[in-house]
Length: 171
Image (cartoon, rainbow, N blue to C red; front, side):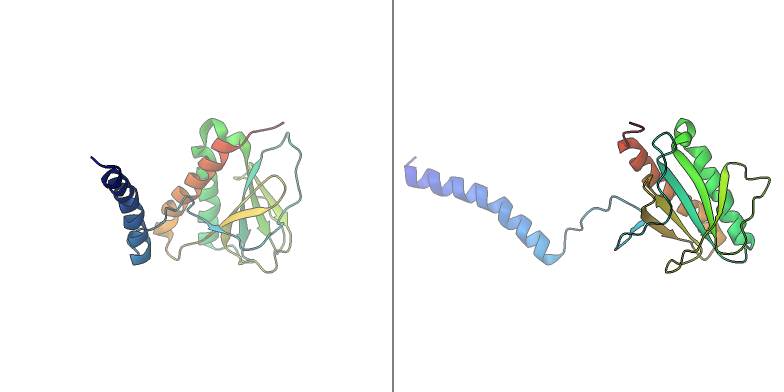
């Protein structure tokens, strides 16, 4: 085989995969994978004050509407179920409910913190994952139907498990 023929075959073999990849990208046949289920914030949102390294690194925050209806109670129950589903890693997550009205502490939610604080600019009735510095990372709008709450719980769990997996823990 001559040098010219070898070089042309080599270039053809190298160029064909690149051209096929380019055609796939330009024609829309390839969809990039999604790693998270929640929605990233476009800008930095400091929702809570920073906590010490000895405390839990992650906080699941619910922005409670002024009037807590049965859907609101269902979300609080969902938060407890998420915390319970974490198993041995549940000490790395704190549950926080932010209220703009009067703060309430229900006796059946001892592991949940209720904080009265303004969250102007953020939609009431959504779940958020907040890091130890108080920075809100992901938010999850609540579904309209109560039957879809378990699916929301699965999405939050998937993202939390990824975050906890890569978390270095207290230093």
